[in-house]
Figure (cartoon, rainbow, N blue to C red):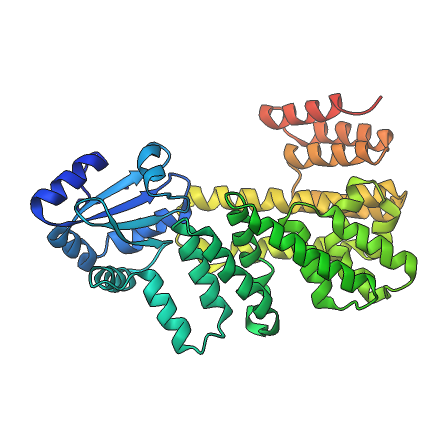
Amino acid sequence: MSEDQFRDMPFKDALELAARENRVVIADFYTTWCESCKKLDKITWRNGKVKAWLKTNAVAVKIDAERNEDAARRYSVRLYPTILILRRDGKELDRLVGCRDADTFLSEVKDALAGRDELTRLRDKIKNSGEEEPDLRMELGNALAARGRNPEALKEYLWAFDKGRANPAFKGVRVSFLLDYIVGLGNVYPSAIGALKTRRALLKRKLLTGAVDDDSISELGSLNYYLKEPVESLVVYDSLVKSGKLSKQGKQRFGFHVFNPMLGKRRYGDIVSLYPDPLDVISRKKGEYIKQFDADYMKDKSRSERKRLMNNSKHYQIIQMGKYYEAFLGARKKELAEKILEAILAFDSSGFTFNLLIGCANRAGDRKTADALVKRARSQVGWWKWDQRKLISRAESAITR
């Protein structure tokens, strides 16, 4: 959405106008699919103080980065939203990555015009904190990566990863957001991937000696997940089980990280041994869906957006539940598999769900159950729901004969 303080003109013309009027250029690079971009529109660009400042001091333009690739490429914009603060000759004074509220934006843009850009501000914060704050070092890494200063960004990220291990408050961020940022950097700077693989090798060596603890298992699993090599966790798991160095608790802790690789290899019996109470897991999956539905971040969404997000969330949970159905059916635990089936269908009995469950039964090698599910689906899904019935027909045609 374009507010009235934004000029409807090409980026080149905005620079020329800024030069004539002796103003700075504020360029909001966005994409149509970016949720944070929409939030920036709603909470910041509509703010009265921000609108007044932009009208008085800047030539403000909004740039769809996917339709104006030349401008995005010129400034190496890869994250959205990115707000560029530019001199009238086009030289970058600062860039602000991500959504921020009105007061933060005004404070940061005034700092930038006074010569204190984001990097300076972050380094001052780090210095004042005693340089022991991994979240600030991660934030500095993000700022450097956004500017294409990849070796410096990696140095900050790795500092946060290595030193952050001892910081309980950073524990979850370290093996989620931070790893995601490092792998993202690795897409343009392969040394980042190499650095993670080196750390994974050291961690693997430690675990294989029998020094197994929950944090190390979680770290290995997260590294393999973000490196898109989850089977590596299964390799370590199997080695530890074979050597007798993995306790029952350790096996359960590994379960989350080896579930999908085991399922891919149809090691159904191993999955069943890790999850003796699948109905409890299914119940928790339903709870996660309900919790997300009630989450605060959903409250400011439009009705259509809320419906879309919740539909996606429901499908995700059904897919996760279906994996347990496949595993217990494949392990010939028919009674429990039937209970899982009924729990899933009580949660959702749409064509999407039947299509998924028929596929699960087929992969588990149970053609009889797959055929029975097709018959049940056709009796439960209304004849007028042609899109859902097409999914059922597609699932039937894929059954191994």
